[in-house]
Image (cartoon, rainbow, N blue to C red; front, side, top):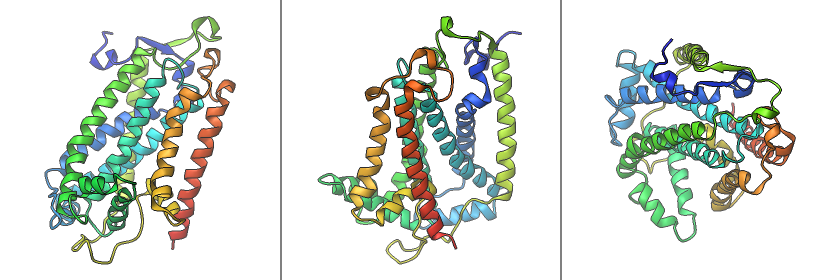
Length: 345
């Protein structure tokens, strides 16, 4: 069989042990699939979305209730975007817990981390584009956090919001970043990330002389597995989108009026929980940036896993990175659950 264009995107062969689902979790391929679904459904939504404060919320309501299958397109877009964040987080954890962040993959680890940050911003700007009562608190509080940054707070706030409070200027900027700016950055970093995977030798494995199993699978088998995983994942996503509607609330009429549930998007609930403890800058800006900095420095300040220990979960030589990552993950999950449980009826 002659390899197609899609086959040529993959290496000719890869180690069979490291191609197993229980090793890769399928998170990288799932992230690519969800990115395609999110992009396609988002493009369809652009035909109906009106990025003005008066029409944004109403246009989403019209898409959901009046456009044929508009509800399905919106549900697919919303849930694929949420699952994309989860898949990217799982992929990052898999990289750390298998020691695939050391030389020569340190820079690609940073590219992956940068992609995760961009996806969070993507989700937050999309969250704001709903312009309904369910996102009012996040828009006001999230942008006000920028104001708490010493010296740069006010200029950054003016750059993001474009006025004294969230309004038409901010909605336009969120729309531009969501549709063009962040999309372009994700494409650049995503292609760069995939290129570096090939350049760095593909999946992290021990050198040939240190491997106990030399079995490999071809690119044809790898593509077959990926297509099967996409079909299963796509069917599950479709069923979920049919039966679980995306959040929707009444459109915002006046931004300075009281209203809206005081709730951040799920991926920032842990930050909202900390904001109740005190200083907005320390708990809402400094600590999240500090966690990001720790993750950035892991490949550079901690011992890199030994080459002989690559290709398996939890290599002993990467124990320090594993402990730090587990601690940070449990902290974020704990704060998120604490906030969610407090607000649950």
